[in-house]
Image 1 (cartoon, rainbow, N blue to C red):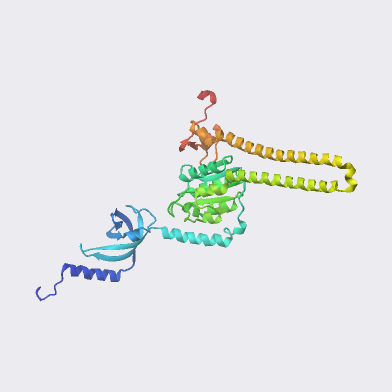
Image 2 (cartoon, rainbow, N blue to C red; image 1 turned 90 degrees about the vertical axis):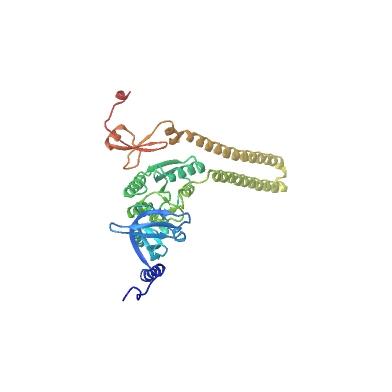
Length: 407
């Protein structure tokens, strides 16, 4: 049989037949590999290669599917890609059309989340009946979070704006990575044991499921559950729900909302004081009017006609007493408001951040997150954290020097 007798196919025909074969056999496959040569086209389509130690595979994720990807596609990331194999006929190259992408291991995290969720729910850790009410007027709010993230800035600014007379205790911890859960647990246990606050805010800003995973840790959940102080959980954004959110006494959608839940609004407190003043004055007037009506009734009595003058003097005394009572109510309310304003004004200069901005720092034990109060404690700790107004640095303590040696 010569070439002239053999069937002849065009290049386009061959490529089309191969495409049909591939799409028929591999219409739904999951491929594991490392991202390489990631390029985002102006159209929004993402082109990349999947590779392992032995081979590479061209792939594309079209714009509509790429919008649903919730992590950054970049070279070196291990992923699971699901889609279909096909042939790009114009170039005669086969490729994967990826419909979904997820980091390798995310499926394991989601399974672990569901298993722990079911376990703790069966133990009753999520029951609404065991959750405690938050204090209405807390004197101290403890915040367990990273000292350098956006969450702590949002929380502190909201607390200052709403209730500036509240004290704030910041327990600095890592909020992601392997060391984050034990640090969070240690901080919660220490604050609980020392009764160092009236309410605790624990959380961090948004991120991927991997970034938030410390708050899906079983030990963190149990530390929140056994804490003797009410806990507000504020992890990620409104759409993020972690195990810590479900165990906590109150869940806030964001760190800012956690601060709003933790303390009352100063303006609302002043309005309630004003309302109480009006109520007390109205009740006083009502009682005076009732007394006046009773006296008038007695004056109309024939038997008491001979003592009318004395009764009229008594009526005048009642009038003067009512005026003094109303004035006393207004004066005490005004004095209480003035004392509140004075307290707020005095607390401003005591803000530790104001002192730190003048060049001072706070030496903290990185293990417990609590302040170190003496040189001997610093030497014993060896490794310490120095918190400045603009961030925190790690330091090693070498030796103890006396005050005379350093002067």
